[in-house]
Length: 278
Image (tube, rainbow, N blue to C red; front, side, top):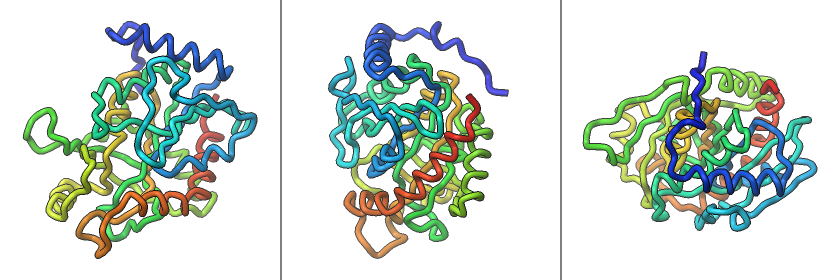
């Protein structure tokens, strides 16, 4: 059973800013749900499936910072999906944009203040495995920190249910099976970026049973776990990592492949949200 965290008692120098931001979101959108989705690069099409939409730009929210990476529009969308009020964050910050960890995870703290209990995190990632080509959707069951910000030791594989909810993973599996959506499972490797990895780095990641690699998400997973959220991370594989393809890696390829997979990602996310208990 997931431990309950009294997150309000957690020391946080930004608590006043968090309350100000959440108040604006709730006042402007009327959000009353408990589930949120964070969209990765090129996955903004998911909001097309939402009814009765209310949209709020990050620039309209106190203390929010607008993303600068293409494919991240910097908007919150609140609306109805399968008779549930949900909140969708289209765009995230990356540390390679020059942001601190605190700034990157600030939106997660705000979401918790808004009443979020279930958080589905999506991203676009590079495949470390030939059997998982672009277009594959991967349920992340574990994560590895290859940023080496906390030291030079080899990273540990973290599969704790605090960060990767078995309940939400089971729902995702069932939805994929019902809708004939091919799904993979694996471990996400976090790197700082913005440069893509070398083939030697990819071999190194694979030696620790890494399955996908990306430049985001892990700070959000860690913060969500600390705050006691139920977490599900879905990686949309948008390219092969270096050494697995003869083609050079580009962000344009990431966006194109993400766009090509919008329909099945919408179907999967919609089914997961429907399956979450109120």
